[in-house]
Image 1: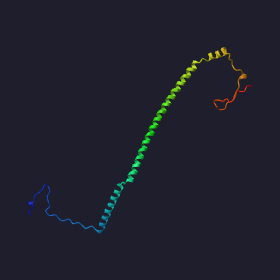
Image 2 (image 1 turned 135 degrees about the horizontal axis):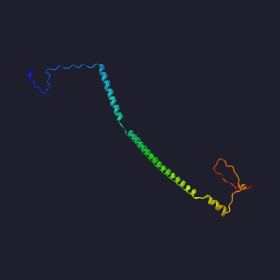
Image 3 (image 1 turned 30 degrees about the horizontal axis):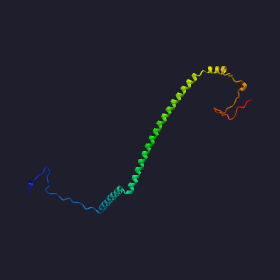
Image 4 (image 1 turned 90 degrees about the vertical axis):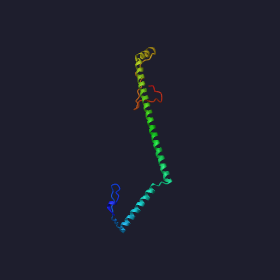
Length: 158
């Protein structure tokens, strides 16, 4: 055959005669290693398939876990909401207390300014006939560390 009689397709040129490639026969050790690798790959594939397989019991267990987790999350959000609501209520009550204390202080000051003690003394001594206590009428008591004293019986006279 003449080299010029071949038709050239595109930019590739065909080789006229190719030499056959010799492949070496694998040794017995190489065959055993290849067989072991194939067995390992098959075992790994089976293990992956078993790991991905979910039976009904496992699915039920996972479903229960998800439901419990969701319920716990909902309860946590409810508790946080309740705490926030109570804190706001406490702040409102504290504000009301401070307003009432300020109002009480203002009323007390108005009352103490409006009372004329000299006028009360004059009316008590002149119109009602009251007099100051004498030394014999005053009885002294010792009070323990309390700010008040309970009276359980009449005060004895001297």
